[in-house]
Amino acid sequence: TEARKPVGYAYVSMYFATELGDWNLMIEQLYICAHAQNKGLGTSFIKWLEIEYNCIARFRLEVNEDNKNAIKLYQRLGFQFLNYGQMVKDF
Image (tube, rainbow, N blue to C red; front, top):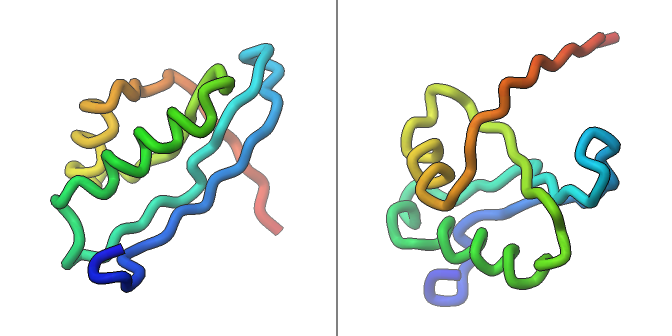
């Protein structure tokens, strides 16, 4: 928080991934308010996750290809793109 006020939120879930054969932590959403960006909060949060969930085999997230700042952050923290096609069926 910045001066004890919320500056964003995160939604994470953990599941067993059969393709990995181990536990996966999915960062479903990570949002930091514009006024609080570029202050190290995203880096701090992900590093905190790595400490708290050190038994997880993989962290996974999705990123919008237009969000260049987020991509730079995630790559700097060791994330790589998967060559992975996804399919959905909406109702």
